Amino acid sequence: MWTIEYRPKSLKEFVNQQEAVNTFLRWIKSWKPGDNPLLFYGPPGTGKTCLIQAYAQEKNLEFIETNASDVRSAKALETIATSTQQRPFLKKSKIFLFDEIEGIIGRVEVGGVRAILELIKKSSFPIVLIANNPWDPKLRSLRELCKLVEFKKISIWDIEKRLKRICELEGTKPEKEVIRELAKISKGDLRAAINDLETVARGKKKITVEDLKILGFREKEISVFDALKIIFKTEKALAAKLAISNVDKDPEEIFLWIENNIANEYEKPEEIANAYDALSKADLFRQWIRLRQEWRFKGYMIDLMTAGVSQAKKAMYRKFVKYKYPSKLIVLGRTKIERAEEKEKLLELAKQLHCSTRKVRSEFLPYLKILAKT
Image (cartoon, rainbow, N blue to C red):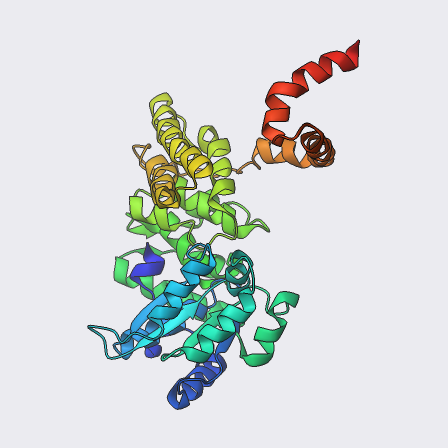
């Protein structure tokens, strides 16, 4: 993906956010074990992760990123804590980035905040935290410990400058209004702007305003729509796989989004069949994870539902598709109250019959429904 290929490799290449950069540099230069961490916050695509990556690469540090998907238990957090005290083998030092910190805390069953505070206190290396919402009540004690650093939306001018440079490196010539329009519709999100540019420009020597029609209107839920656009439009398997890495939705829900929109994007019967074939294999791993809690299979599920579906097409469809909300989620939303009431009744029956709700549903409920009608 161009967002990876052209991300800054040093602080000199970093776009905008001078105040945040200066705050980070003052902190990192004086940091010593036991010091309080920084807490980055701000809109997506404004350079929160890129800043730490660029600094680590410039200073030859081992960069270790952790997010809510990596931490599924207190045991997983203990493994990370051990790593914060071990010297690296090949690099001169380390720097840690904890993304989606509220999600990490939420996944640790008991004492999540306390565990994070203890980890920070004992770490031999600097730790930076990222929060989607730093004012979340469960982050209160952590927020009071940290120095908050705000990342603001990237200016249109800075986005234009970066997009022009990428076009030069790719040997692509955009019409005068193309770059300005891409910068405008990104709404300060540089990552989204680069993704849009890649969608319309990859493999082309010239980009016209007409090419921008395939982007459509940027929806409020930009992350999931942006991810779907990359999965269905890109011709690279890695780009499709990485498309969901920053989406604020669980892979289970993204699975439903992809399932619901394959036939909207692809037109040829064999492509639709190949896409659903890849998705059905992903579903097998999905069910195995659900039934057996075998989380090691999640990588296979994600590969098949993203890269597998993406590679089902022979060539990119240069058309605008309005991606539809998953019908299953609509049904679940409409029946939420009824299902909650049913669950309460099943729990009461399970208590009276001394068995699980699953057994009540499968073995007792059919007969109870018959009795209720008589």
